[in-house]
Every structure is written in structure tokens, then in C-alpha cells.
Image (cartoon, rainbow, N blue to C red; front, side, top):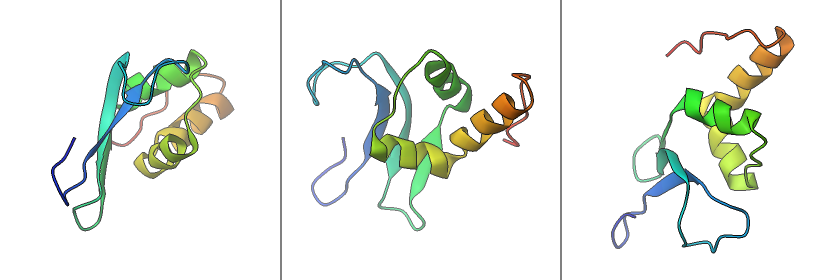
Length: 89
């Protein structure tokens, strides 16, 4: 994704055994470091569903999910006994 000198990244769900540039299961959002401040857009509900199913994000993906507020919403849901919590979006 992106162009020369203009990076743009998709946040995706992929099998752990899949090659880095191989196929993926779902697109959760994107990260655009070229804007000021860098833009992180994530479908919170879909990301939470994958995390609840046992998906393990990479260190970089975890950092982006934290920036997007997904991990905070997940923490609040788990703390409140699993009841859905409004994400404020």
C-alpha cells in the first residue's frame, strides 16, 4: 500500500503461518503515518471480536490498537463483566 515516499499500512488479520505479504482473512483498519498527527482508523467492534476469538496481535499491531483505543475498550468490557461498553465514537 502507499506509494514511493508515502507509506500507508493496512491493519489485517492473518494466519500465523501465512507469509508476511501473503493472503489475509480480514482488514480491520489502516495506519497513515504521513498525516500530522499520524492517522489510525480501526473498526473497533471487528477488532474486539478477533481478540475475543484468541487472535494475538504483533507488537506493532498492539501499539496501533492501543492508539486507536481498542485495547482500552476491551479492558473496560472485561472489567465490567463482559457487558458492552460504549467506545465514545
